[in-house]
Length: 233
Image 1 (spheres, helix red, strand yellow):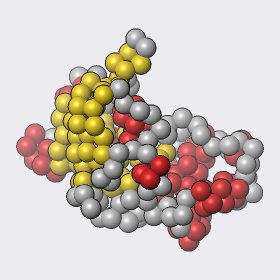
Image 2 (cartoon, rainbow, N blue to C red):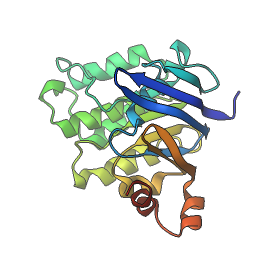
Image 3 (cartoon, rainbow, N blue to C red):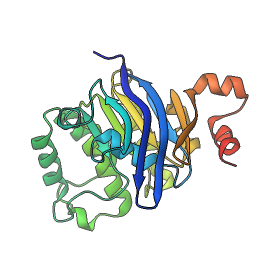
Image 4 (cartoon, one colour):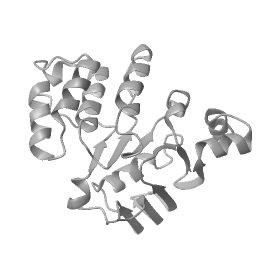
C-alpha cells in the first residue's frame, strides 16, 4: 500500500481558451487534513474534479490511493463538489438510502448521528431546502462513508456564520482523524485553519507553496490566513 494518499506530477488541464492547471506537483500523505487554498480561478475545483475521477487531465500523472483515478478509486473516495449535485425531487431519507445503495462503505450509524447534528428532517424534500441545509446534507452523505479519502470543494458555501463552527467540529474533527485523508478547498481560511495539518497554495494553475501548517507558521512567523494574504496580495 502506498504511503501517499495523493501523488500529482506535472498535472495540466486545458479547456478551450483557458489553461486551468499548469504543471501541478503535489504529494499528500495518508491520514492528514489538507487545505487547498487559492483565489477564484486558481484551478482548485479543476484539480479536485481530476482527483475525484470525474474529469481527465490534459497531461501529467495522478495517483489516488496508489492508483490512477477510475472506478476503483471512486469507490474509496468521497467527493463533495461545489456545484449542486443532489436530486431535488428526493427527500433526505431517499438521498441517504440512495447513497447507502451505491457505496458499500456507507456507515448508517454515523449518518444518523450527523443527521441529528445537521438538524435535517428525513422527510424534507431536497428541492425545498435552503442552500445552507443542502450544503449540510452534502456533507452528511460524504462524511457518513468510511472513505479513505474525502474531497470537500467549498463545503461551507452557503452555511451561515453561526452554524459553521458546529459543522466544522462535528463533521471534520470527528471523522476518523489519522485514518482518513481530507482535502478541503475554501476561502474561509481562518475558520478551517485549526483543522489543517498541511496546506497547499494554488495560484494561476500552479502550486506556489506547500508544506506542514505548523512548520509554515513557525518559519514565516504568521498564521496561515496571514500567509494567504501575503501570497495572493
